[in-house]
Image (tube, rainbow, N blue to C red):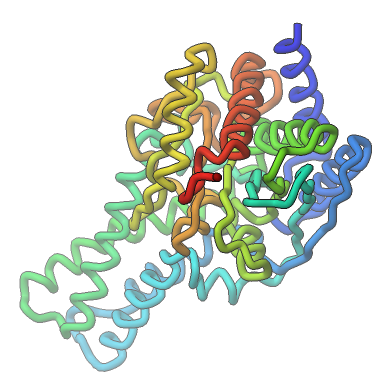
Length: 389
């Protein structure tokens, strides 16, 4: 009965968020979703605040600019202009690939967004802080996320990145040696294909409902936060963080980390925890460069999966090749772990089919119970670098 009630409550919260419409980053529905989540928290007795920041509505243009610069140069003439274009393309691609830098994303971030933040103090003095992270916004569809292509998304990104680097190098070296110049020209169709996929997403894609990605994560995080507010943890401060602009470059998470001193915090990121798939924790995450999850949090999740077989919790067997809000933490040397329902791919990933009716109530229930258990283990000191006592 308790499990059924958990699933019903989580689904009700998901439907509330989906009802405001597709929550495009910096759009009015993203702001409306933050207001809905804030009202629900207030009804649960949890005070929260909105922390505004500026961000872009899409990741597409920040990803497209380096490729466009590389294509603008010529490996045949290979003059000073071409060398400069190659150098700029490579430098911008490398900087944009670092979650801490993102110069193009920052420059293009003119829209208004906000993070929703709440805090629940423990019964005694706080020995540690655990932050439940989820994101409010939803994505846009496109051929890039077609079910036939989605399982190979990491390979597609790797090929596009390699093509950009080869062409940039050919430009920087002035078209010499000849073999490198030929490789640079051969890379052009790959770059054009990548630009085509990005353009198709922006021109023909639609903003999706985002029930699983990520109304489900917000619903589970909010439910657990409400429970802990009614009965605070022993010695662990709980922070609820629902970010904006995750889908346009994890910008909300970057803004939060730059605004707050989170040294020593533990982050549990919930992203897509209601899909009909295996509930997993991710040992690694990232695109291009890959960051390992916090080893002590991994150990806690591993013990929980073995102790509570009914949760169906398992480590991800393959690197999905995506960036999450937790990636921003890990790139800074922080402590984080992502929980997500996925197998070879994420069901209905960034498609119009990501609606509440396609969620699995059993997975939602087990995700809620998993987060409860992980937070309890953290409160017991199981993830402390120096055990309590």
